[in-house]
Image (cartoon, rainbow, N blue to C red; front, side):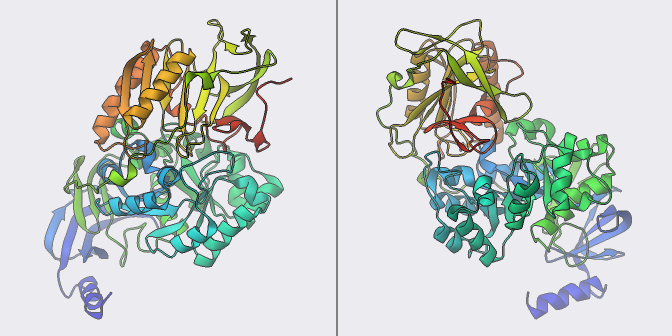
Length: 577
C-alpha cells in the first residue's frame, strides 16, 4: 500500500472525505463480538474503512438486510464439480462464496505441476478468490500409478509462489505417523516455508493422532464423530465440518459444537457437484443446517468466515470491520440465509442469484490428451481364482468408506468369477491410464446393485485411472474402450450400446461446459443408471464408484496395482483362503 492510499483510507474512515461506496441501512453482523450493528458500511479502494454515518460517492441501499462477511469454504476440490475454476466462481459467488481454499490434487495427479499452473491462471478469470493449497501427495500413496509424481524438492520450490497458500491435505497419514522419508521431506518443506498444512486422518486417535498433530498438521476434514472432533480440538487442530455431495458429516458433528470450542470449527464442502450447488446451494446450505440443529446464527456465520480466515492466515478478511477487504454478503434473514447481493472487494458481483461479471476462460488444451493405456482387452478382466471364498468391497451407506467383506462365490472352469443374479456382487476393475503400464486390477464389489450393462469413469480418486463395474466382461471392456476414445468422462453401456455419456476432456475429469450443462448430463446419467442398469436407488452411481479406488479411506479399495486394505496399508489377496 502506498502512503497516498493509506492516507485516503484514514481520511475516509475519519469522515473527512466521502467513501467510494457506502452500503446503507444494513444490519451488520459482528462476528468478533457476536452482536449486530445497525449502520452504514463505508468502503474505499475495496476495503471497509468504517461502520457508522458516512457519505459516499456511490451508495447502495441494503433495505434492512443482514450484512455478513463473505463466506470462506475451508476445503474444496474444484475438479469434483467437473467444472473449471472460472465456472466454479460463477456457481458459488451468487450463493455468498467469496473465498475458497482449493486443493487441486485431482488434476495435479493427472498432469502434474503443469496442471497447477493451469488452475492458477484459470482462477484469475473469476472474481471468486481461489486460494490454492499445494497437493502434498502426488501420487496419494505409492500403491497406485498416477499421471505425475511430485517430490519434496518440487514442493519446496512451488511453495515459494505467493499464490500458494499452504500444503494440501496430507493423505499419507501412516507415513506421517511412521515418520517415513516421503512424509518428512514434504513436511519439512512446508515448515521451512512457514505455511499451514492441511490434514486427512480418518480413524486416527491416541498416540497416532498425537504424532500426526505433532508434525504440524493443523486441520482435518475427515472427522466423522463427535469423539474424534473433541480429541482433535483438544490437540489444537481445526475441524473442517464437511457437507458435500457424497459426504455429510456436518449434522453429526454439530452435536459437539460448544461456545468454548466453536472457534476451532470451520465449514467445508470437500466435493460438491453442480446439482447440489444449483438445488441446495453452497455454504448457505451449511448455515441452514447449522441453525436448524440449534446453533446460534452468528456462531454459524463465524464458522463460515472468521474461523476460516484465522485458520489459514487470511488476516485481511473474515469479518466486516475497518481495514478488512470488503467481501460482504447481504442476507434476507438468518434462518434460510437467502443471499440477495454479494460484494467482493467492494464491487457488486452477484445480484439476486445472478453472477454479474463476464465469464472468460483460459485455454485448457494442454490439459487434454491424458490417456495412455497399454494393451487393454476384455481378457484382462478375467479372474483366476483358486478358492470360492473371497474378499469383497462392501459399499456402506452415507459416505465413501467401505467395508471389508467376505463371500462365497461361484467360479467357472477357468477359475473366473461367475455372477449370480440373485447375489449383489459384480466385478470392479481399475485400468491404469497414465503411464502405459498395462495394469488392470480386478476385484469384487457388493452393494452397487447394478443389474445390467456397465459403468466406466475416468474419475477415480485420487490418481484418476479408469474405473469400471458391470455385469459382463464384454460390457465393461466396451465401456472402457468407449471412454478412452471419448477422451475421458463417464460412459454407461448395455449390450454393446452406449446409453449415456458425459465427456470430460480436461484431464479426463473436468468439463469445458457450464455447471448447468454438467447438471443436465448428470441428471440423465443418474436416470439411466437407476432405471436401465438397475443400480440401487440409494446409491449415487458415480460418486460411489469413483471413490472405490481411494486407498486412504478405509477399509478395502482397489488401485491399478491390486486390492488394498487401508487399515493395514497394504495389499491383500482376493481369496480369503
